[in-house]
Image 1 (tube, rainbow, N blue to C red):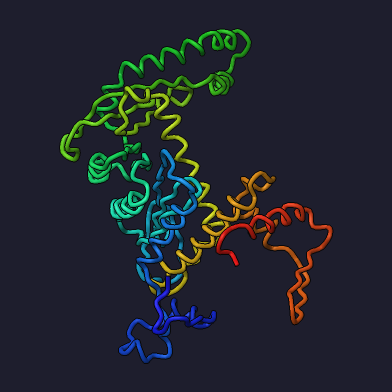
Image 2 (image 1 turned 90 degrees about the horizontal axis):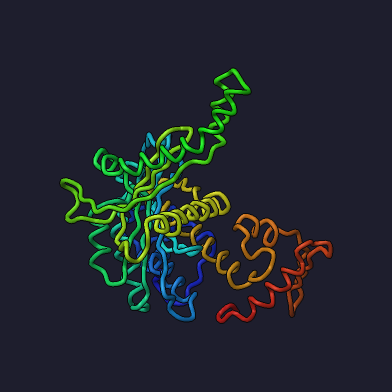
Length: 386
């Protein structure tokens, strides 16, 4: 992962620190005392996908790739940081791609770029790496409306065993074509509301009380599937699934565009089973940024901040691997990264070093000593852990 002038060098923390702070204007890097090693960006990016592939004993039948962007607020004059009105501050806008709990892409970006900037390149790269080992695995690409772009649709449609479910914004045409479903949802909601309204009118005089009761009536939800093509941006017709909700707050509509045919999955299941679970990715981003402090991109240069993001990303990969392999069937099997750090890694201990061994003594009152013992036994069985 790291380039070095000589094989076998081991860098101390001070030398590794120079990866971030090494001046970029060095004329002779080979003789500079401040440039002993440098990161291989391509190898680092590839390592996330390689680790993901190696975590499976055999190729899975299908996987889901979730794309999303978040904000990384900065408080200085960092290179590439700009004010973003959506996030209400000066920030970066890193792109993440996860497959379940596995982190595949952590790409630092300026916040003044298109939300989908670089997403296609990353999809092409990681799907290419996956296909080298898993030629028969079905891949589903998911994302919010920021990724509803012709180039992403076109790429997925022209790849074998690759489909997509991506949200898209509403417009007048989609609303017009959903008129019949809107009327059905409205009629169903009013039908459920009518007996409650009659009862409330006989008991109360205030309209405010009736408005509060309306919020307790279940929302009416309907789905429909249509073939749709934009006037200019789309090259062909595509399937769009519309979700219509009618309740006390009026009409709400959501749309997803997909390459999955209606004969394979109906619109209600497509939206609830295929698209909605995408929200789980938000928890992975929270683990990365809140539990592992991946938002500490406080160095001056953009390149060094990208390196910091990758270092924190590898911390997530390691803890996730620990959770997956060492905490299986324990009370912490589904724990967040933050809870694992707090309960298992941030323990007070007494360390004794002798000529032959190192003894780590944890308090006998430690409430998680049984899980620690299980994890210790399991980690020793993992190949290449020393």
